[in-house]
Length: 235
Image (spheres, one colour):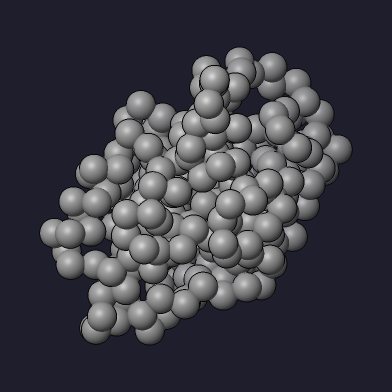
């Protein structure tokens, strides 16, 4: 049975959630779910008779609250997170190079710190694509001025880990704010405005000068997401 890739969208946070499925048992994973969309996601799984195995985070999000903990509780799936991102309740703590198997296929974890220290991208070799979280966006990249951000580390992650992948590899980011759905490694290497033609020092200077407003939900979202989306009492 062919693999499946479904891309869902949350308009409030411009977040892409991905549902992947494989094999005769319809084993599935969900990447970067959003709390406000949990009923949509559960219905999506039910309609397609998918058996959720893992709920996967790319990093600790600052702009929305995840539904990873609740999805795992309802479906019996395991929450899988980067080991360096401080999400202690997740039973699966992923290190660089780890593989998550579902059905007849797997995702390979690629540690890509910079946007946050524990950021991970997930390579799906069988479908020739990579899920890049906030590390690499379409014509951009994640900011580096929030929790554990490091512009130099992000430059290294993108240029040394992601830009060494094949040019035609399809890139699926965690966000897009302009209605675009995917890009390729080659397109971003050649034309990403923040990276193309810039030295490491130039990139760091650019990122340090962005002066972006703080995400509205950061003070609630980060503590909640470190608990797989459970908002602490009194927050």
